[in-house]
Image (cartoon, rainbow, N blue to C red):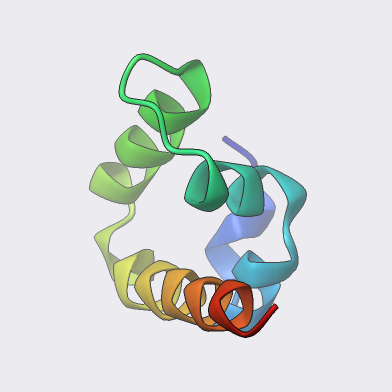
Length: 64
């Protein structure tokens, strides 16, 4: 995964095309899902930001 993600805030994650695709279309057998899950395990300090981004994305999707 890209090193730039280490400096991402929740808003940055919510705007990232790969992150957005993973949140909107999760698939346990998908390479993208495996990549994000592995990245979050390797970078637990970013888990809260990623979760906040997921919640933002879900809130926006609910209102559209």
